[in-house]
Length: 162
Image (cartoon, rainbow, N blue to C red; front, side, top):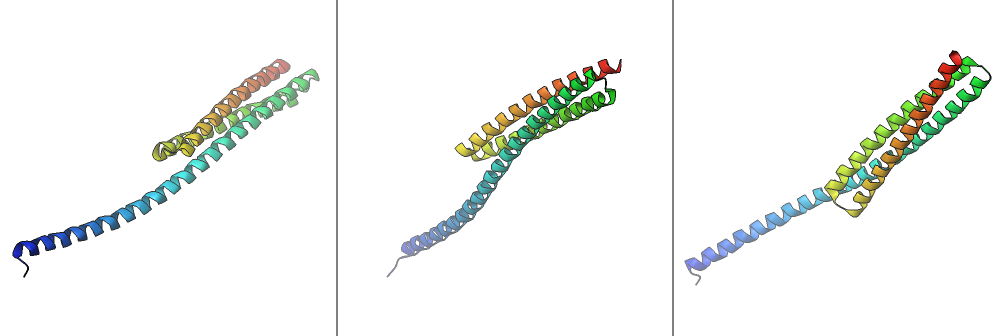
C-alpha cells in the first residue's frame, strides 16, 4: 500500500517531469529561432562585405575616370579647345562626386558588417568586418584622389577660359 507521502512524491516527480518536458520543448524552439537569426546575420555580413568591396571598386574606377578627365582637360588646354576643357573638368567633378558616394556606401556596408560581427562574434564575421573597413579605406582614398584631380581639371579649365 502506498502512503500519502509517497503519493505526494510521485505527484511532484510527475509535475517536475512535465515541467522538464515543457522546458526542453521551449529550448528547441528558441534554439531553432536562434539558428535562423544567426544564418540571417551571416548572409547580411556576406552581403555587406560584397557591397563594401563593390563600392570601393566603384570609387577607385571613379578616381581613374577623374584622372582621365583631368588629362583630357590638360590636352585640350594645349589646343585651346575651351569647351572640351570645361567638359573634361565637369566630368572630373562628377567622377569625384561618384567616388564620394561610393565611399559613403562602403562606409555604410562596413557599419552593417561590424554590427553583424558584434551580433555573431564569430571569426568569419569579424574578418568580413575588417575587410569591409579596408574597402571603406580604399574607397575614401580613391574619393580623395578623384577630388584632387577634379580640382586640377577645374583649375586648368579656368586658366584656359582666361
